Image 1 (cartoon, rainbow, N blue to C red):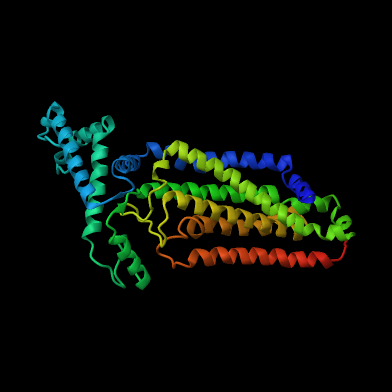
Image 2 (cartoon, rainbow, N blue to C red; image 1 turned 90 degrees about the vertical axis):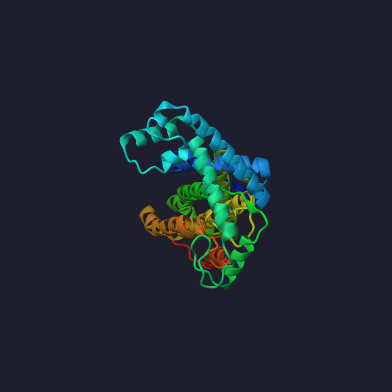
Length: 386
């Protein structure tokens, strides 16, 4: 354990940590500011989320037909109250309107009508909330009206179904109560997650990749390999690097998730299942949003640990920084592309087979583990070169 501790101290050398902190700060400002800071100001996204939050507080995490009828009645009452207010406004009556629906559905494309709509949507929350409730009503009714799906049919969100997908589609469509999870929230969370994972990958490369280069420049490797204990250092370094990758990923994920929860106020959705009539993201598993966040955070942790071990292996064979960068940059680019497409954003999606995430992450573990084991065997018998 003492040797692992010493290796961790070498990995977290203050200059590398400082470089990683500077990079993370810049990356956060450039890429994470939008999903974390502007979500609560983005309309109509935030209005849909707030209306759904109020429904969860009133009806619970899922909505059945009786609760839906009550919601429709509530919507009609709120719309009527706002229409009564509009009827008292001179700028509305002057254009021949008396309700919000008449203004929105008008064929009149005069600048006065557009100016009136801009004023109403800028000065009042009610038009946005009415629009959000109409969106929920439309999607609920469409989901209930949909018949039984068969092979070759399109799913509720437009995916052509095979036999397993058709069965899953029918299972989700036949629920007595549909989960109240807003699709905008999943899109926002996925964006924050992939940006955080990309930041973690870059941070790990900055901190871990110079490990062997530093020792090589200090001529430490020939000294280590001259003893039996030194030959065993590779395994201890591998453990230390895996721990370092996990620590970096855990710290950065904790920071991003804490800011995400505080800024966006999404904790109310934690017990809600994500397979919702309001979200195009459907999965094979009945994850709640809280469970999905934990699972994807664990996946980001696995990717971070794998990237740390891969950086270590490449650092061992790269004689100079230029070679290290030439090998690492394409690998890092491929990993980032995978993070933004399949590895995190949609790996649990209904569009892929049920076994897809397990094969992908099992394959990553086998490849990285195989490289480390092969290199570890080579370390025990390699020649001392000075």
